Image (cartoon, rainbow, N blue to C red):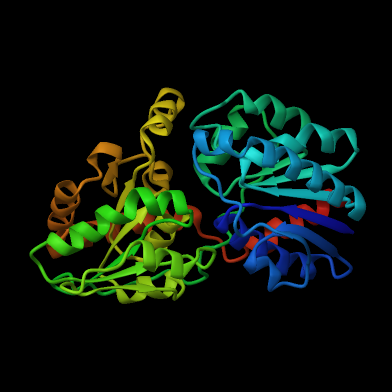
Amino acid sequence: MKYFFVTGEYSGDLIAASVIRELYHADPRAQIAAWGGDQMKKTACQIYRDQSGMQVMGYSGIIRQLFAFRQLIKDCKRDITHFSPDVVILVDYGGFNMRLLSWLKKQGTKVAYLSPPKTWASRSSRNKALRSYSDLLIPLFAFEQRYFEGEGLSSKYWGHPLQPKKTANPSLKPIIGTIIVAPGSRMQEIHHILPTIIETARSIKTPYKWIISIAPNLDKDLITSTYPLPTSTTIEYSTSPLTELYEQGDLSIITSGTASIQAAWAGIPQIVVYRTSQINYLIAKSIIKVKYLSLVNLEMNKDIVPELIQQKMTVTHLTNAIEKLSPMEARQKSLSQYLNLQNLTFSNYSSFNIAKTIFDLSM
C-alpha cells in the first residue's frame, strides 16, 4: 500500500519517524512519502518537502504567514495527488493539516490523524470536520481517547510512540547539581523564554550547572549569537539529544510540550514554563478550556508539576520554584507521582500497533 505523512512540528517528525519504521514491518510492500523533517529523512521514506523550519506558534504567527500557508497547502495537495496514496496520515500541526481534510475526503483518500488537534483544550468546533472527513483518530494520551470517544469520534489509543520501552528508576542526589533546560523547538518560544532562563542562571545564588538544550531543528549559531551566555556562571548550550541530557540532570525546566512528558518518563523532576506575546496569550486565554498546560498534569488531572505561565514566568518565580524542589523529599514526591503516569502511557508496542492500525485502514 501507499502512505503519505504530513508533519510540520519537531515532535511530529519524531513521532512519524517512529511509526514509519514500524509501518515497513507491518506492511513489507509499503511505499511511503512525506512532508517531513530530519528524523523522517533517516527512514526509507521519500521526502517531498523538508518541513524542519515550518514551525509557527500563536495566532499572530499564522496571520503573518497566511499567504505563504495558502501556497504550501496547494503544493501539498499537488504532491499528494502525484503520489496517489491509499492513506494519508496527518500528524499534529492542526493549523495546516485541518485545511487538507475536506479536500482529502473529496479525493476519496482515507485519512488517519495521528496526534489530532487538541480540541479538548480549545476550538471544539473542529470536531465536526474531524468527524466528517477523517476515518480514524490516533490520540497519544488516555485522557484524549476518553474525550474523543465522548464526542463520538472514531479513535484508537495505543500509548505514546516516543515512550522508552524501559522506564527510568533514577536515584536522586541529596542536592541539585545540574539543571537541564528545554526552552522549546520553535524560535518564537526561544525568544520569549530563554532570556529569563539565562537571567535566572546568572542571578541565582546556588552554583548550579545549567545545560540548555538546542533542538535539532533549530539554528545553533543563531541562538548562541543572539543569546550569548554570561561567563560568570556555569551555563552551557548542548545539541545532545534531550533524552540523554535528562540522564545527566537533577532538575529540569521545560517549555510545555512533548519534552515535559519525556522528562516524566526519564524520572527527572521538572518545572514547566511558558510565555508568548501578550496578544497570543489573551486570545488563547479566552478560548482554552483546560485547567493545566503541562501534559503531565493534564494526563493525571492534578497538580503534579509546577507551571509558570506568562506573567508568572519571571526570575523571582522561577528561583522560588527551584528552591521549593531543592529538598530531596520534594523531588522524591515528583518521582512517585510519575510512576502512575508511566503506567498510563506505557506500551511496549505502541509504534507497531499504530502502524498496524494504519495498515488495516488501508485495506
